[in-house]
Length: 81
Image (cartoon, rainbow, N blue to C red):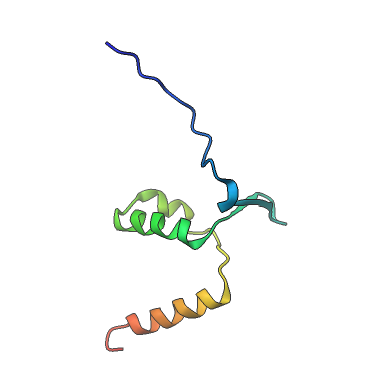
């Protein structure tokens, strides 16, 4: 039987998509583009991944223009809108 060749994954080769910072309240923060995060989150929601609930109480920071777009989208998603 052939032996599997295992490798240690150290993350993406290109570090331009993320920056590491430290929040004033403690832990490290990663800044990513929405294009990097949203497809992964959408797939996790669609697949009903239970690990999403681990982050229910976490706060996220978004730009004010994204907030405005999300609020408008939410408004027009209401039944009868």
